[in-house]
Amino acid sequence: MNRTLAFVFPGQGSQSLGMIQDLLDHEIVKETLIEADEALGFSLSDIIKSGDLEMLGKTEITQPAILTVSIALWRVWVSQNGAMPAFLAGHSLGEYSALVAAGVLAFKDAVKLVHNRGQFMQEAVPAGTGAMAAILGLDDDAVIALCKDSESAGIVAAVNFNSQGQVVIAGEKAAVEAACELAKERGARRALLLPVSVPSHCILMKPAADRLALALEDMLLAKPHQIVIHNVDVKAHTDTSEIKEVLVSQLYEPVRWTETIEYLAREGVTTVVECGPGKVLTGLIRRIDKSLVTHNILDGATLDSVIKEI
Image (cartoon, rainbow, N blue to C red; front, side, top):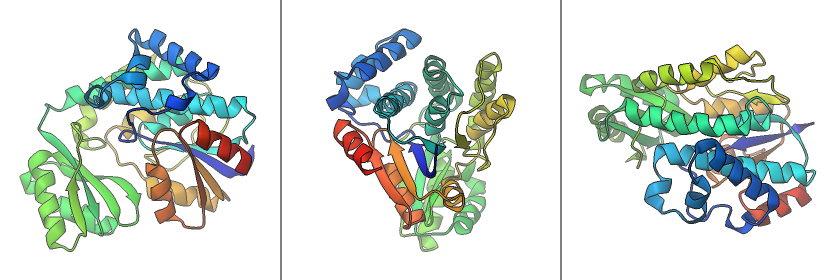
């Protein structure tokens, strides 16, 4: 294991049409897609290969699709004797990819679990009643304060601490909109509603978390092969019951991404590889700590390039 290397896995919002297209003929990628289809009982692979944006954007499809692509890329990396990171982490949904990579969750179990997770989340809040927004240009404490000051309009909270000056809020739509207006009054550079149907990581997701806890109850987990840093407490857990607990609480508690990257840097990590579709996490990491060297693995070309560099 390379103690200076970490792999991170993206969450919802990183999906795109045509992701992993240049690796679809790779044997490991084909096997991973088939495994996902068999576990789910429908053709996720067809959606990944040729689905439309509306279908790919459904939460219960997005989550297994991103997990499947991320793990396919990870498996190809491993098969080509890529350097093994000592540390793993993932942003929200990406934490499940990290746990599969660490051997905690079997992929077939994880892909079913995140499909259900997406359904639980969508069903927890009626369509159109929840919202999320990105607040740019205010520090964490200022965003927490403006959410508290907007509670007369409903439930709203800071839920994704993504980097310095970039915090995502979530809650009831009217309260999120009120918080956005207040953010602008208090000097935010931008307060932008996000195109999502589910207000993730706030207390409105507690019913979904309760259902996830039941789904996890009888699921077999193994001790991690690598250090996995969890979103909710910025800690590594080896006890499988504790891992289940943090996965449940993750649904309605904030993603502490800034602290996660700062933790990795303190532990001596110098290089971070984002493994999965998109480049969202790479951009955040560069804003959090410019000293960290970042790479992306999102297709065959980037995979070949990063293997040569690391």
